[in-house]
Image (cartoon, rainbow, N blue to C red; front, side):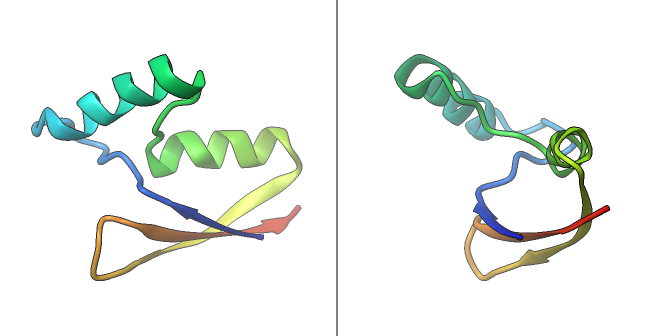
Length: 67
């Protein structure tokens, strides 16, 4: 499975991603997640995080495979 996602950094020194997270929570009831948080969601759904592919933008391609 491929997920195209704007991942939150593990270290939150820059407040910009947190602002995006607040917008997601208020506008869509969703949230931005770190790669570790996505990995936990995948585990709960029977998938395993295979790799995270960076792009030239803030968007990442997250690959998961069935466990």
